Image (tube, rainbow, N blue to C red; front, top):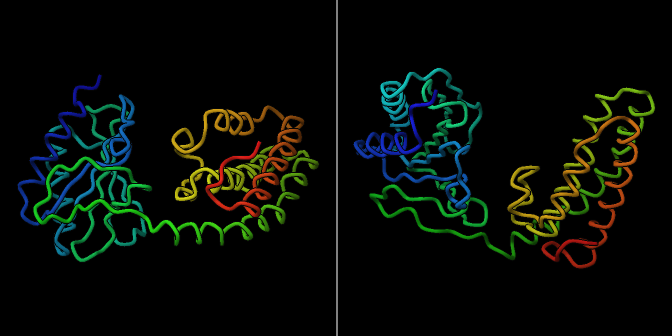
Length: 260
């Protein structure tokens, strides 16, 4: 039974991080930044800290969490650029209330404040006035989106045979893996380029935020495959839809809306 609540964790982290003068600013991101957090959401916390205080800040936070409820799982993704990140699962917080803590060095310009990408984070405190709302350069971003279209189309056309080949061989798992990687994901990227080009790199996540409901339902239908015969039919549907997307992207550009 879960006895540690989201409010408990927020209060604890606010006190712990606020007590350290090495921490300049803290905010809550993730679903909270988009106003979509619910009972199943984790807790995404981002802090800007002194360059030499990253490890010590993690240590202080971990000790505080462990005192509230034993930390039963810790994961630190490798290779973070400009930031460090650790995920924590607490024994008494349940399966879903994971703490995702990101620490950004004070000297690093990466602050995840672009509204179009990261929403509007809930500021906990800001000692140095650094949490300024930022926006993407619209024209530059659209130009980058336009430049992506030829490569996306070429890669899609190049690799569809992998799906068909493995399907004809009766290799269902391999065929499905290629379909997910080389058909469905590029299709979703093309749909994002049409409807939400600034979020073109978000993959299959947050589709309900970025695409119309009917489009999400169509993607869902294509994503769930029953057998090889169903895969063959849905592969053709996805290829036709992708072709229409690319045609519109080439004629009217990213952000021009979805094709019929």
